[in-house]
View 1 (tube, rainbow, N blue to C red):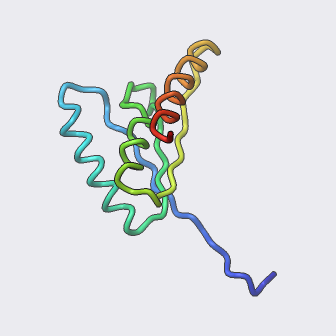
View 2 (cartoon, helix red, strand yellow):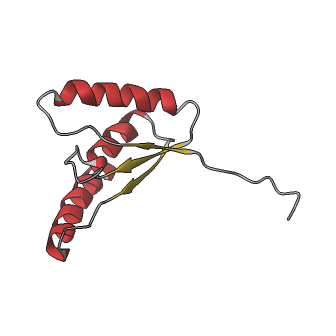
Amino acid sequence: MYNQKSTMTVRYEINPPKISDDGQNIRNVLFERIKAISSVCNGIHLTDSVLGIPRVSPFEIAERTREHNKNIKITCSLRIRGKNLNEIEKSLSSQLVLLMVYLY
């Protein structure tokens, strides 16, 4: 047990950009940051909303990131405070459909 090599995952938390008119440019900056970060971290963690500010879907960012980097580990957290069960279900369902389409 003590002779086994332990592994540790270092994930960098990234807040997707706020929803704005300059959406594509800010996304490109984000993807450049992810590319740079992936050389020193083996994973990223995307958040859904910071302090309740609407942001680009972490699932959209995860999907685009996966297109360019098949090896990086990606996790997402979703803010559910202030949302009822129907809103949570609707949000997750639509995002899971997008992921399923991408994966298959």
